[in-house]
Image (cartoon, rainbow, N blue to C red):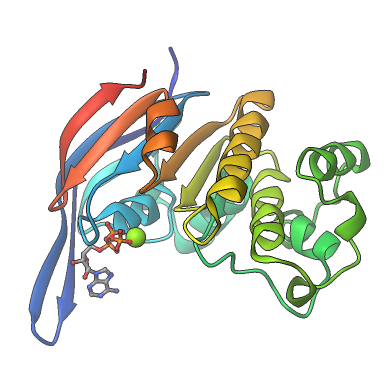
Length: 227
Ligand SMILES: Nc1ncnc2c1ncn2[C@@H]1O[C@H](COP(=O)(O)OP(=O)(O)OP(=O)(O)O)[C@@H](O)[C@H]1O
Ligand SMILES: [Mg+2]
């Protein structure tokens, strides 16, 4: 199968007043197009840092990240910003919606920033799958946590990025809403052939993934196929 994303020998150390924190210590991973990956590991093991490095949000100290064969961090910052917009969608744990814009504008933001318009039909389809059709004119503060999370998911998918990264997308949701949200994220990814990389504490989500990546102390300690 085609490998969309390959990380080789990634190191990342944070400098803090109390000394260096070695967040990633030699991580090599490859990701195949269209699969669903779950990243698990204890708090502080380096999962968020890994996601940031893989998605072009944060430069590693050492190692390479290749997307479709292209060396991501060999690009200029400007090129990287373009890459992030066109290739990746990111669902943050705290949603990161823009309060001053309504739901429609929030969802379409990745396209707007790229000077593109939303494909009307796709927007309709997406908001229907995510049950947001009647929320498009509302503002984030007028939505529940689960609804805001679904808006964040719609926003991560709207530009049809090849890669979707989600950092504990269900962390703040109750169990049922969390399950529904994951189901929606997965069905979006499957429908559009996207590669999905999700950090999760939820065992059920991890079990349903095509591949499981276990991180401990900034290293991959286990990889396995999902059940
Ligand atoms: N900006 C930062 N400055 C300094 N240290 C950091 C920074 N971000 C993370 N760290 C440290 O790097 C290590 C890895 O953090 P990271 O956020 O990647 O862990 P995580 O696996 O995502 O944890 P959690 O499950 O709690 O979200 C931790 O020891 C953390 O304290
Ligand atoms: Mg984290």
